Length: 256
Image (cartoon, rainbow, N blue to C red; front, side):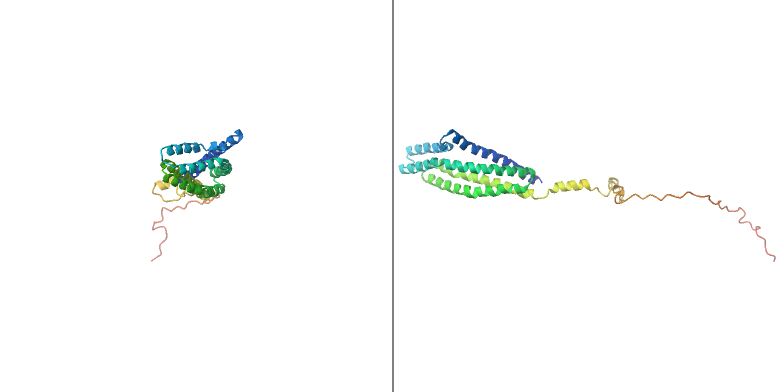
Protein backbone atom coordinates (compact mmCIF):
# COMPACT_ATOMS: atom_id res chain seq x y z
CA UNK A 1 0.00 0.00 0.00
CA UNK A 2 2.86 2.37 0.82
CA UNK A 3 4.66 1.55 -2.41
CA UNK A 4 1.44 2.11 -4.32
CA UNK A 5 0.86 5.50 -2.76
CA UNK A 6 4.53 6.38 -3.35
CA UNK A 7 4.53 5.58 -7.06
CA UNK A 8 1.13 7.20 -7.66
CA UNK A 9 2.10 10.30 -5.69
CA UNK A 10 5.38 10.53 -7.59
CA UNK A 11 3.42 10.25 -10.82
CA UNK A 12 1.36 13.28 -9.85
CA UNK A 13 4.55 15.22 -9.18
CA UNK A 14 5.99 14.12 -12.54
CA UNK A 15 2.84 15.34 -14.31
CA UNK A 16 2.98 18.77 -12.65
CA UNK A 17 6.69 19.22 -13.38
CA UNK A 18 6.16 18.08 -16.97
CA UNK A 19 3.47 20.72 -17.49
CA UNK A 20 5.73 23.46 -16.10
CA UNK A 21 8.71 22.37 -18.23
CA UNK A 22 6.56 22.21 -21.37
CA UNK A 23 5.23 25.72 -20.72
CA UNK A 24 8.81 26.97 -20.31
CA UNK A 25 9.81 25.33 -23.61
CA UNK A 26 6.90 26.97 -25.44
CA UNK A 27 7.57 30.38 -23.87
CA UNK A 28 11.00 30.83 -25.53
CA UNK A 29 10.02 30.32 -29.20
CA UNK A 30 6.77 32.22 -28.65
CA UNK A 31 8.67 35.24 -27.35
CA UNK A 32 11.12 35.13 -30.26
CA UNK A 33 8.28 34.77 -32.78
CA UNK A 34 6.29 37.75 -31.55
CA UNK A 35 9.32 40.00 -31.07
CA UNK A 36 10.81 39.18 -34.50
CA UNK A 37 14.23 38.17 -33.19
CA UNK A 38 16.57 35.52 -34.55
CA UNK A 39 15.90 31.95 -33.46
CA UNK A 40 19.60 31.41 -32.90
CA UNK A 41 19.19 33.36 -29.67
CA UNK A 42 17.43 30.29 -28.29
CA UNK A 43 20.82 28.53 -28.43
CA UNK A 44 23.13 30.70 -26.33
CA UNK A 45 25.66 27.90 -25.93
CA UNK A 46 26.57 28.27 -29.63
CA UNK A 47 28.36 31.56 -28.94
CA UNK A 48 30.16 30.02 -25.97
CA UNK A 49 31.40 27.15 -28.15
CA UNK A 50 32.63 29.64 -30.78
CA UNK A 51 34.70 31.48 -28.16
CA UNK A 52 36.03 28.21 -26.79
CA UNK A 53 37.13 27.08 -30.24
CA UNK A 54 38.94 30.36 -30.85
CA UNK A 55 40.77 30.02 -27.53
CA UNK A 56 41.82 26.48 -28.36
CA UNK A 57 42.99 27.56 -31.80
CA UNK A 58 45.13 30.31 -30.29
CA UNK A 59 46.69 27.72 -27.96
CA UNK A 60 47.56 25.61 -31.00
CA UNK A 61 45.23 22.85 -29.80
CA UNK A 62 43.21 22.97 -33.01
CA UNK A 63 44.21 23.12 -36.63
CA UNK A 64 42.80 25.60 -39.12
CA UNK A 65 40.94 22.86 -40.95
CA UNK A 66 39.29 21.54 -37.74
CA UNK A 67 38.30 25.03 -36.66
CA UNK A 68 36.68 25.67 -40.04
CA UNK A 69 34.68 22.43 -39.97
CA UNK A 70 33.44 23.07 -36.43
CA UNK A 71 32.42 26.63 -37.25
CA UNK A 72 30.50 25.50 -40.32
CA UNK A 73 28.73 22.87 -38.25
CA UNK A 74 27.73 25.39 -35.57
CA UNK A 75 26.55 27.84 -38.20
CA UNK A 76 24.30 25.20 -39.74
CA UNK A 77 22.77 24.54 -36.34
CA UNK A 78 22.09 28.25 -35.88
CA UNK A 79 20.49 28.52 -39.32
CA UNK A 80 18.09 25.64 -38.63
CA UNK A 81 17.23 26.77 -35.13
CA UNK A 82 13.72 27.72 -36.30
CA UNK A 83 13.04 24.11 -37.23
CA UNK A 84 14.20 22.92 -33.85
CA UNK A 85 12.00 25.53 -32.18
CA UNK A 86 8.99 24.37 -34.19
CA UNK A 87 9.55 20.72 -33.27
CA UNK A 88 10.05 21.67 -29.63
CA UNK A 89 6.79 23.64 -29.51
CA UNK A 90 4.83 20.78 -31.09
CA UNK A 91 6.28 18.18 -28.75
CA UNK A 92 5.79 20.43 -25.70
CA UNK A 93 2.15 21.07 -26.66
CA UNK A 94 1.50 17.35 -26.93
CA UNK A 95 3.27 16.79 -23.63
CA UNK A 96 1.01 19.30 -21.86
CA UNK A 97 -2.09 17.39 -22.97
CA UNK A 98 -0.60 14.05 -21.98
CA UNK A 99 0.61 15.39 -18.64
CA UNK A 100 -2.90 16.66 -17.88
CA UNK A 101 -4.30 13.20 -18.63
CA UNK A 102 -1.58 11.68 -16.48
CA UNK A 103 -2.37 14.01 -13.58
CA UNK A 104 -6.10 13.29 -13.78
CA UNK A 105 -5.46 9.56 -14.00
CA UNK A 106 -3.12 9.58 -11.00
CA UNK A 107 -5.48 11.69 -8.89
CA UNK A 108 -8.61 9.70 -9.77
CA UNK A 109 -6.76 6.35 -10.02
CA UNK A 110 -7.92 5.78 -13.61
CA UNK A 111 -5.11 3.77 -15.14
CA UNK A 112 -6.29 4.06 -18.76
CA UNK A 113 -5.56 7.82 -18.69
CA UNK A 114 -1.87 7.12 -17.97
CA UNK A 115 -1.49 4.82 -20.96
CA UNK A 116 -1.16 7.59 -23.63
CA UNK A 117 1.65 9.20 -21.62
CA UNK A 118 3.52 5.90 -21.40
CA UNK A 119 3.22 5.21 -25.12
CA UNK A 120 4.10 8.72 -26.29
CA UNK A 121 7.02 9.07 -23.86
CA UNK A 122 8.49 5.76 -24.99
CA UNK A 123 8.22 6.89 -28.63
CA UNK A 124 9.93 10.17 -27.73
CA UNK A 125 12.81 8.31 -26.06
CA UNK A 126 13.28 5.95 -29.00
CA UNK A 127 12.77 8.45 -31.84
CA UNK A 128 14.29 11.62 -30.36
CA UNK A 129 16.43 10.54 -27.42
CA UNK A 130 18.43 7.67 -28.89
CA UNK A 131 19.49 9.46 -32.13
CA UNK A 132 20.41 12.54 -30.09
CA UNK A 133 22.60 10.46 -27.78
CA UNK A 134 24.32 8.78 -30.74
CA UNK A 135 24.94 12.06 -32.52
CA UNK A 136 26.38 13.90 -29.52
CA UNK A 137 28.42 10.85 -28.54
CA UNK A 138 30.09 10.85 -31.93
CA UNK A 139 30.59 14.59 -31.63
CA UNK A 140 32.13 14.10 -28.19
CA UNK A 141 34.53 11.49 -29.56
CA UNK A 142 35.52 13.85 -32.34
CA UNK A 143 36.13 16.69 -29.89
CA UNK A 144 38.15 14.38 -27.66
CA UNK A 145 40.35 13.32 -30.57
CA UNK A 146 40.92 16.98 -31.38
CA UNK A 147 42.05 17.60 -27.80
CA UNK A 148 38.90 19.33 -26.44
CA UNK A 149 38.34 17.33 -23.27
CA UNK A 150 35.74 19.46 -21.45
CA UNK A 151 33.51 20.03 -24.53
CA UNK A 152 33.69 16.34 -25.35
CA UNK A 153 32.57 15.40 -21.80
CA UNK A 154 29.69 17.87 -21.93
CA UNK A 155 28.66 16.73 -25.39
CA UNK A 156 28.48 13.12 -24.24
CA UNK A 157 27.11 13.46 -20.69
CA UNK A 158 24.30 16.00 -21.17
CA UNK A 159 22.14 14.03 -23.67
CA UNK A 160 22.82 10.72 -21.91
CA UNK A 161 21.74 12.18 -18.57
CA UNK A 162 18.50 13.51 -20.04
CA UNK A 163 17.65 10.17 -21.65
CA UNK A 164 18.43 8.24 -18.45
CA UNK A 165 16.25 10.59 -16.39
CA UNK A 166 13.44 10.16 -18.92
CA UNK A 167 13.72 6.38 -18.68
CA UNK A 168 13.65 6.53 -14.88
CA UNK A 169 10.51 8.66 -14.90
CA UNK A 170 8.92 6.35 -17.45
CA UNK A 171 9.52 3.30 -15.23
CA UNK A 172 8.06 5.12 -12.20
CA UNK A 173 4.88 5.90 -14.13
CA UNK A 174 4.77 2.29 -15.35
CA UNK A 175 4.92 1.02 -11.75
CA UNK A 176 2.10 3.42 -10.84
CA UNK A 177 0.10 2.09 -13.81
CA UNK A 178 0.46 -1.46 -12.47
CA UNK A 179 -0.35 -0.48 -8.90
CA UNK A 180 -3.48 1.43 -9.88
CA UNK A 181 -4.85 -1.78 -11.40
CA UNK A 182 -4.46 -3.71 -8.14
CA UNK A 183 -7.27 -3.78 -5.53
CA UNK A 184 -6.69 -1.68 -2.47
CA UNK A 185 -6.39 -4.63 -0.07
CA UNK A 186 -5.82 -2.61 3.08
CA UNK A 187 -9.02 -0.63 2.61
CA UNK A 188 -11.01 -3.79 1.87
CA UNK A 189 -9.78 -5.53 5.00
CA UNK A 190 -10.54 -2.50 7.10
CA UNK A 191 -14.05 -2.33 5.67
CA UNK A 192 -14.63 -6.01 6.33
CA UNK A 193 -13.48 -5.59 9.92
CA UNK A 194 -16.02 -2.82 10.47
CA UNK A 195 -18.87 -4.79 8.87
CA UNK A 196 -18.28 -8.19 10.52
CA UNK A 197 -18.25 -8.46 14.30
CA UNK A 198 -16.56 -11.32 16.13
CA UNK A 199 -18.80 -14.19 17.23
CA UNK A 200 -17.14 -14.36 20.65
CA UNK A 201 -17.88 -11.54 23.03
CA UNK A 202 -15.10 -9.64 24.72
CA UNK A 203 -16.02 -11.03 28.10
CA UNK A 204 -15.88 -14.62 26.92
CA UNK A 205 -12.55 -14.04 25.17
CA UNK A 206 -11.04 -12.52 28.26
CA UNK A 207 -12.26 -15.24 30.63
CA UNK A 208 -12.33 -19.01 30.63
CA UNK A 209 -15.85 -19.28 29.25
CA UNK A 210 -16.22 -20.70 25.74
CA UNK A 211 -19.94 -20.00 25.29
CA UNK A 212 -21.15 -17.98 22.32
CA UNK A 213 -22.90 -14.70 22.76
CA UNK A 214 -25.68 -14.87 20.17
CA UNK A 215 -27.27 -11.61 21.23
CA UNK A 216 -25.12 -9.74 18.69
CA UNK A 217 -26.96 -11.44 15.82
CA UNK A 218 -30.71 -11.03 16.42
CA UNK A 219 -31.44 -11.45 12.71
CA UNK A 220 -30.02 -14.99 12.79
CA UNK A 221 -30.75 -15.99 16.39
CA UNK A 222 -34.06 -14.55 17.63
CA UNK A 223 -34.50 -14.52 21.40
CA UNK A 224 -36.37 -17.44 22.90
CA UNK A 225 -38.89 -16.62 25.65
CA UNK A 226 -40.88 -19.21 27.61
CA UNK A 227 -44.53 -19.44 26.48
CA UNK A 228 -47.02 -17.66 28.71
CA UNK A 229 -48.71 -19.92 31.29
CA UNK A 230 -52.55 -20.08 31.37
CA UNK A 231 -54.25 -18.81 34.50
CA UNK A 232 -54.26 -21.48 37.17
CA UNK A 233 -57.64 -22.93 38.33
CA UNK A 234 -58.63 -24.05 41.80
CA UNK A 235 -56.10 -26.48 43.16
CA UNK A 236 -56.91 -29.74 44.93
CA UNK A 237 -56.46 -29.92 48.66
CA UNK A 238 -53.09 -31.17 49.65
CA UNK A 239 -52.79 -34.79 50.53
CA UNK A 240 -51.97 -35.32 54.15
CA UNK A 241 -50.64 -38.42 55.72
CA UNK A 242 -52.74 -39.59 58.71
CA UNK A 243 -50.96 -39.68 61.94
CA UNK A 244 -52.28 -43.13 62.75
CA UNK A 245 -50.98 -44.78 59.57
CA UNK A 246 -48.72 -47.09 61.55
CA UNK A 247 -51.25 -47.86 64.30
CA UNK A 248 -51.69 -51.71 64.57
CA UNK A 249 -55.20 -51.36 66.01
CA UNK A 250 -56.51 -49.49 63.00
CA UNK A 251 -57.80 -52.65 61.22
CA UNK A 252 -59.63 -55.57 62.96
CA UNK A 253 -57.81 -58.84 63.43
CA UNK A 254 -59.11 -62.17 62.22
CA UNK A 255 -60.21 -64.74 64.78
CA UNK A 256 -57.72 -67.51 65.43
